[in-house]
Image (tube, rainbow, N blue to C red; front, side, top):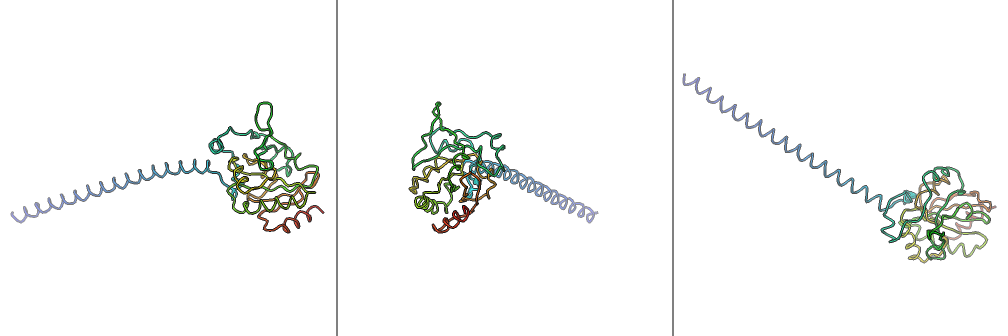
Amino acid sequence: MNEQGGRSHNGGHIGDRQADVNRSASLITLLIAGISIVGLVVFAIVNTTGGNDEADGGGTGAGVSAGVDGAGNGGTGSDDEVDGASAAPAMSKDEIAAVAGSGSLAGVRLPLLAESGDSADQSNEAGRTELVDMGQVVEGKPTVLNVWAWNCAPCRQELPLIEQWGKDNPDVQVVTVHAAREAGRGQAFLQEIGVKLPTYSDTVDVVGPALNLPRVVPITVVFKADGTVATIHPGEFTDAQQITDLVRGALK
């Protein structure tokens, strides 16, 4: 009888230990699940905040993907904070869609960012910067149009070279397009490097899609006097002879 009672007593201890093990396992499972949920919540918050920072910070570019995905990718508010000024007018989504893939700058309208290194001073009666039809800008004279972005390192070296080339080749018009949302940073960039070229601001990413340009900066487009594209050169120029060879070859 004592032996049977001992077995029952031992069985009770074993059962108690098993129950303790089961409870511990359940607690550990609940703890792991809780940690996982907290981790997922933190991950979602960080990603949401990071996405907003990326949208405000600008590219691209392309580079800024022309953005040149720096470009200019239709952000909200960030440029106003940088510039301390009201946003410049821009083409509507329908207008942008209408010129996309056209292979031409006709109907592409941009505000003037800088001329002779100064802030644009083309204002309409309401006191806002006017949109300029880029198709008209590149017509009437052979034109070299350089697309760049404020956060593009090669652009810093290339723009002064292009400016000097334009001075040495007055028969060809040289203009540039800043392809990024942050117009104020583009303007400051030009002042910092001392470049004084007519520059237009593409904050809505319209030039690249209209001309079917690769999504990189810098990129240079040569136009014939009738406003049609003669050639497209993705990438940086490192000396004046490269520009001469490209432009003169395209305009033959």
